Image (cartoon, rainbow, N blue to C red; front, side, top):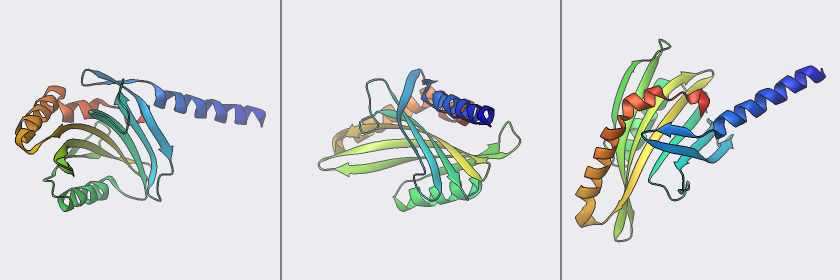
Length: 179
């Protein structure tokens, strides 16, 4: 019995260790800034990674892993698309077959959040896949602050940075089991 507990402990420690390892993505190194299990009835876990010197409260780019239970990847993608539309974003949703032969969904949209006389523009890209008992989603987001007269320049910079990263291709290369 001690042996079984030892194996369980080692498995737990190694999974926690894997999640705290830095992730290289788009020419930046991201470190774990927030991690929580049992976030809600459907969100089993959330892990957020930010570049060095940034926090999950104050970031310019972020990677995240969301693990959901009781919902299929297709339903999650459709629900997220509806939520983005309800927030006045214009989401783009596409699907393809992943390396495991299962359908994957890619969703991206720009959110604009007013903050007094300024606002934040946030570009989100999601890769949503099936997982045992539910779905897992990998998110990459970039954001910039703008004033109304500088919004086009901020959006152009976000677009350029997104294209530089090659977001959909790069998201496909991220292994959610190592996040």
